[in-house]
Length: 100
Image (tube, rainbow, N blue to C red; front, side, top):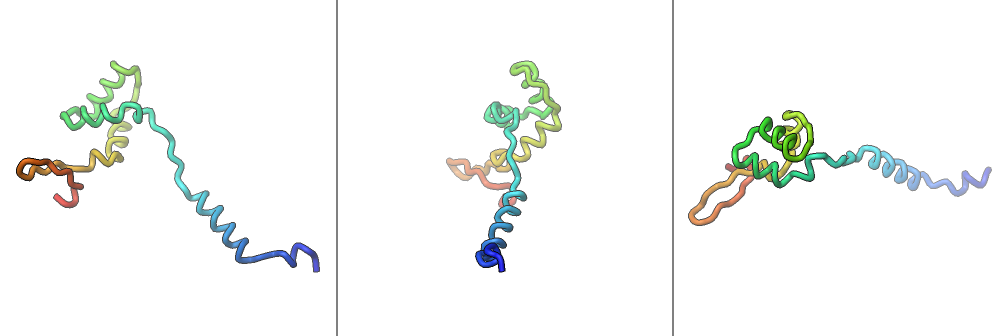
């Protein structure tokens, strides 16, 4: 019997394999070119600008050429764009759209 067979631990090997597979499944986040302008884009969108308006604003003011559909996909992923303002007396409360 060889020395490697004596020190082989099946439970440790399975744990190591599962850890490697979990790391491989993990999604990698790639930084978007729009992240730099996130707050301005949200403010413009909440003020009523369309995605085409935002694309034009980025092209003219920041020399960033990007398609309106890419901006739309980016904006849909933002948590601050998925809330609705509900007025209750003197204060405004942001609620997720499902609760409204």
